[in-house]
Length: 270
Image (cartoon, rainbow, N blue to C red; front, top):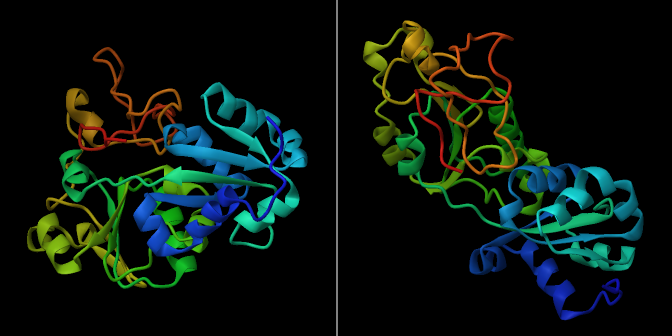
């Protein structure tokens, strides 16, 4: 396939238009820029990638960790000139590659049905950098999902996506939630829980444990609910893997299975 060379083409204008919220809302797509975000999208959400655009230099530089896995997954990989990439991107330095990705629309009901142990709720977070940082931090501490209020910034805006550094593809992010309704739905049960299990609020975000107090570690047969690793599922599957009955229960330590994530005895939907 010939390289894309016309910065004024309809294809380039369509990709560039994803910087605008109305276009993202209408198409259900958004733009991912730079190697970190694109790499994580290829690794954890290849089924959502519509197109991948790279310069010739980027094709060589990221051949092993991005281009080859993308082609193996059957994705459309296009070579483009630096001028075309610059016309597509929101940032002045997209580092030679961008991807067009479909939005994921998980619901609060789906997240709660998976029995989460830890949720992070963003309320009135309007700064893109702050929103991305919270999503990245939630991913780092092993949160089961991020909930975003309807008064917060659009998490698919280019600045937020860049700030998440790929964490946007690691855990469900539920958007457009009414804060008070969401807090009521979570049924925190603060009055019956020890102080250490109450929700923690910092800088416009809540870290919550739904359904009251966390379950304490039980006998080996039920200890799956008490421990979890923060590793992500295998890229070859779209679901969190369920442990077999013969697998010994993990401990909350380095002995936890690095290939699985456990939460309340159930596994979040992709």
